[in-house]
Amino acid sequence: GGMRARTALGENQEWCKMTLFENSLRTPLLISAPWAPASFGRTSETLVELIDVFPTLQALAGYEVSPFLQGASHANESLGARTQAGERTRANTSANRSRFALAQFPRCVPPGMNASADWEHNNCNKNTTAEYTAMGHSMRTSDGWRYTRWLRWLPEQLVPDWDSDGYGEELYDLRHDTPDGDFDAQSDNVATDPANAELVASLRKALREAFSAAVGG
Image 1 (cartoon, one colour):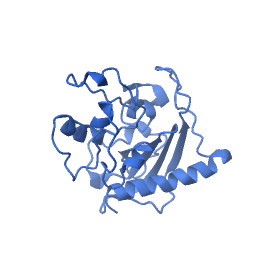
Image 2 (tube, one colour):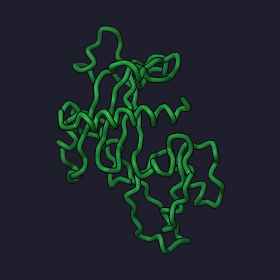
Image 3 (tube, helix red, strand yellow):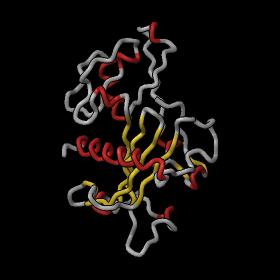
């Protein structure tokens, strides 16, 4: 999990939280279970996704986790028990739980707009999915990297064009976390560094496999 969730107030030249940067996506999962005193103060470095919240609450309330959910219950782990295998569906297997967390966010760039120069105007706040032009897909790995790839969006199929070159890639080294409030946190995109070529290729493949499996194709 994470230790903070905040609104960007100028970090990465962004405002609000409509980004795929770490300081906007990283969110802690805090659970209070008064009936399980052994869990008090327990922490975990396991990666958690927001889709895990509902199944976790289901399990904590004593219900079976709905089998159609993509998220996984972290109830056992939160209470100090060993997490049962096979709790996740599709791409989110129990093995993947400790490896990565996924996120995505759209952009809407009208014809004639310079996407880089007019970045503050290419949000999709008032657009339907049919008007999305790009989708950012991001993977946060358990070993401290955030990899993001921006792809052309295919609105009729509601999927990204994985076979296109896309609009760019981002890779951030988060292995040495910066103090909360660091204005320059996650500002060095190292995706084009030759030393990271093998890592980028591996993450690019893993990203496509994870998102493709998550939507069933």
